[in-house]
Length: 306
Image (cartoon, rainbow, N blue to C red):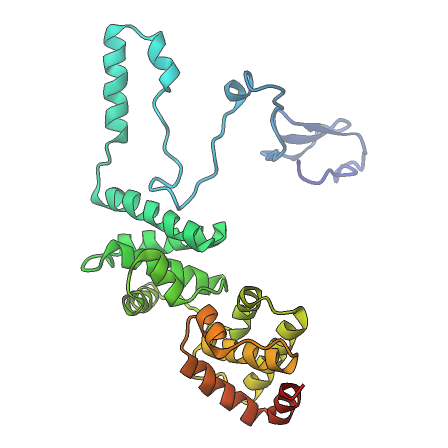
């Protein structure tokens, strides 16, 4: 739409205002004052009623995206249907031009073309939102431009960029899940992630254990009441600084285990550990800390007897 229409002329006070969409001007018809010029019309320029006339009327393409090596700004020379309209020499010229267009000239572009395809694959495997994929592609592009990829495998940098993007958008994904999707060891992804965020000066807040609760509760098929109770336990643990210095997945899984016992939806420590990607020992240790520090022993024991 155009900018908000004026009700009257600021010079003569006339309400006879004309909006010239072709010139992008707002003019007073009484005194001729040009009130505004170079206005931008953000509305749709035309409408399409069928597939035949649509492409010929379009002037714009898809929005730019960091997930394409050329950020989606590249153009394509002709299409396969144009081939049949050309003569012998023109056909050769057509294929020669397309060949040179597809040929990528710089090392950075070649790296991006392969790496961003891998990034899309891992993102699809983890079912990550589009905005996380875009952020990860932007981080990887910056890493390539700064020369941070040298000496490291492309896959580990891709996984590190994706993990950093997940942390920035507060999308809970563990290093174990990232390692399973990318085929890279968890320790290597962690090292690359820390190196990238340090060199690119990306500020990332610590993970919130509560972000993992919905996923874990859904996998364990626990009720909303148990899920709410686990979040309440985590909030109590945060107030007594019990979550500091402990892995967010371990403390979240332990809180969910305690809440399941309180609400009579018993799950074994093995089941909870498998879903959270931690060991039974971690669940057991965090469980003991929670019930001791938060005085939940009586409440847990009461429901255990039922």
